[in-house]
Length: 265
Image (cartoon, rainbow, N blue to C red; front, side, top):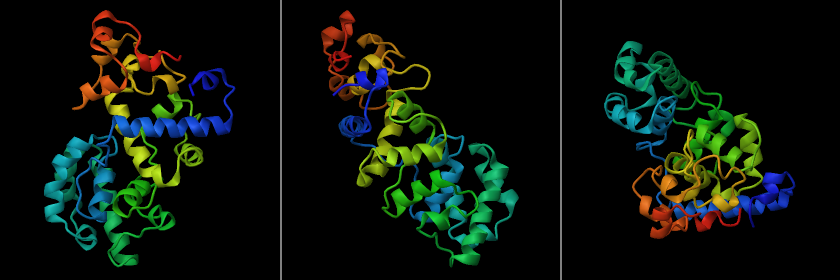
C-alpha cells in the first residue's frame, strides 16, 4: 500500500482509510514517547496551559505555569484575580492581555455555572471563555480520557501533505479525520502527528529522505530525499531510531542513496 493513488487523485475512501491507519501504526513505532507536552496536575491547569500555548511553545508555557499555578489553585482564584497580576506572570507567553482575560473569564464562568469544575462535554466546554474545539479536545483527551483529534498547525500541515484531508478549516479537518482514524486512537494520533511535525516533517524543510512515512506520503520530495541531507534535519532525542525506522543504513547516509522507505514511490 503506497501513496501512488493519493498522488494521482484516484485513491478510494476505503484505501485512504487503510493508508491512514498504516500511517498511525508507523507513527506509533516512530514516536512511542508521544504525549501531551504541557505540564499540569488537573483539568483546570491543563485548560489554562492550553490557553497559554496559543502562538507559544510548550517549553515556554511550562516555564511560566509553575508560578501561575502556585498562586491560583482554583477557578475561584482565577475569577477573583487582578488582571495585571496575571498578565505579569504570563507575559513571556505572548498575547498576555488577551490570555489573561480568557483565563480570568474561564475562572468566573466555572465558578458561576459549574461549581468551579471543568465540564467534560464538548458542548459545555466550547461555551467557556478561551476554549474552542482544539482546546476542548486537548482537555477531553488528556484530562478526561475521552478520545479527540486536536487540529493544530502541525495537524493541518501534515495531514494535508499526507493527502488524508484537503483544506485548512480546523473543524472540517477534524471531522474528516474522525472518519479515517479509529476512535480509540484519536488522542494518540494527535500526539504522534505533533511529534512527527516537530521532529521530521518540519514546516519549511521536511526530512523526506529520513521519514518512516515516505512510502505512504504523496508529498514525498517536498524536502530533500537524499538520506544524509534528510537525516541532518531530524530533531529530538530519538534521531538514531528514526533513521533506523526509515530504512537508512550507514552506507545510505554516506553515499546519498535513496532510503528503503521511499523505494516504493
